[in-house]
Length: 308
Image 1: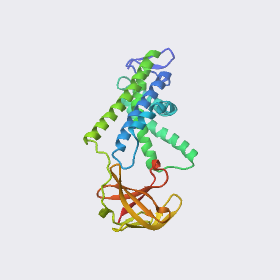
Image 2: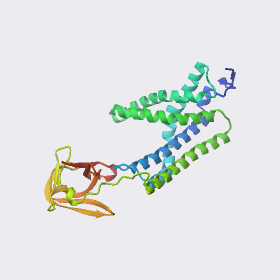
Image 3: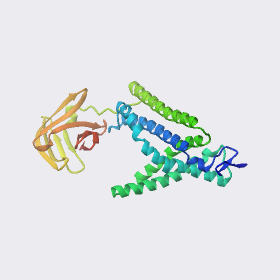
């Protein structure tokens, strides 16, 4: 393949492969950050929609829309770090591999896809070591494997868009490409949200609904994994033993009743001691559960019991 040389001394192919020096340019940096922002917006919309199908809440569409401007500002630093440690190294490795094999040119995107897992592994190792030093703990292998897969997936689109940015010159072209990429991500996220809301309204996307249990179905013995039990009798008497609380365990005897609040059944258990509180019905029709929150409900730290 014919090779020419740019003014800075970097090798450039006739097929438009570009110089290695162009990878670490300001235009590639800005466009890559815009691409990562677009990916984050789409991923957030998808996770929020998926969260509506789970018992544990992942988020709220209206809250996500409200926090979007804040995330745009705060996300600049993570976007810069990921661009410098993941996206641009991916593009550099892809161009180096293509040049070494003599196949650089219009098929360079294949090399970007192949280089992403390698650069993602290096980024996972670097970020994992830094996180371990800061927290003085090491996460499970599954955590790092998930991070590697997520980084490899995120690196490919951002590197491909950054590659396009390096093949042109001019601040106006860079600004236009940045706006198109970031705006396209926001529009895609908004479209996903609209489709998700329409899907839930029509039933195509089934939102989670707790099982509807009557008094007769609640009567019985409910146990947790730590030896705690809650006995609900048909005459309305409730007895608790070794129930977990934020700081200790509690026990007591009292009453229980099934209430209806905003169209949903909620269980109220009033027993002596610190076991008094609001209980909720969860799980599925085949495997219902009772639970209450330990601390802040937004943290979703629950004490769960299943019927035995």
